[in-house]
Image (cartoon, rainbow, N blue to C red):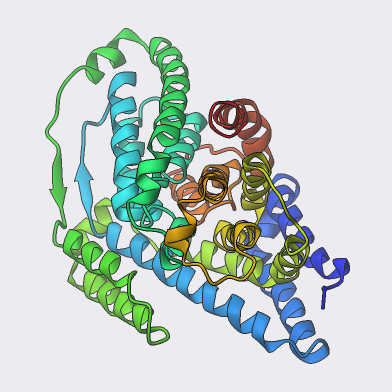
Length: 419
């Protein structure tokens, strides 16, 4: 049965508050956002359980949330036990190289792992001239677009891998798209950063040109990160993967020297904020996702353009993993209504292959359009706020950065690869 559109209201209200409350009543929101988010989520869950008697949808969403927050939280905690000592000041070219390295690393550690590992060094490296665009481009490149080459890079691609897409198939087919998007974003960032750099006093620029050594403390946590990434591939029994990850995370946290956490200004506040807000988001978006799946069943003969833009726009505000799965099912049904043919064989069908590439690009790239488009986004903002960096509000992020900078890049990607 198709859910009522009225059930989407709590989701819309929560998104509206996340966007506008920090602008108009930030002090109240800072104190009461847990009550608001959890109350709206509880209202939707109660309706599904008590009125619709739909336990399956609630259990499915709760399971996805637990897997999501356990992985996000573990990568945050373990990477917080690694302290990278860097140059205190950098020039634009060095910043570009760091962002590119982070984009590559995102495919090995995941966008969350790479973001949490590099955001603190990134802030320190640019501390004399840190600006909002430094945080925004970090989110664009390392927290989102960078992770489009492997199933480890971003959760949607991992779900595709679990459904039968070979591990390196996505690497082979997304590489030119990934390279184009990363190159465009790095060029735009360089222009921003070069302008900022030239505004600095000569004494600061001279200081920037001094070289310092790079050092890593807490290196044992790279081993724990490796265990977590291997655990991601555990599929059964239920929550064994999460159990292994939690035990590994605890071992990491208690074995890390206090001095490393102190040097990183480590606290649980950023992950606590993400956990609470996304608990509300995962609960309230249940009706929105069910409406999407219900309407998707009637869709046929769809083009890569449709998949790219629809999967992308929805991934900007809904969790991109279930959005990817919904459109994946539509693409599969278009070429294989019976559902019998294995995915590996369907990939030889040009229509299906093009659709999967378009869905993958849309789901991963558009996650950078808002702070809630992908889990690391809000965490990066929260850490930057903790360092008293002036980050753009939810609305300003969209109006001053996503729409004028990122959207033209995504439009060009569509024109070159999916038109």
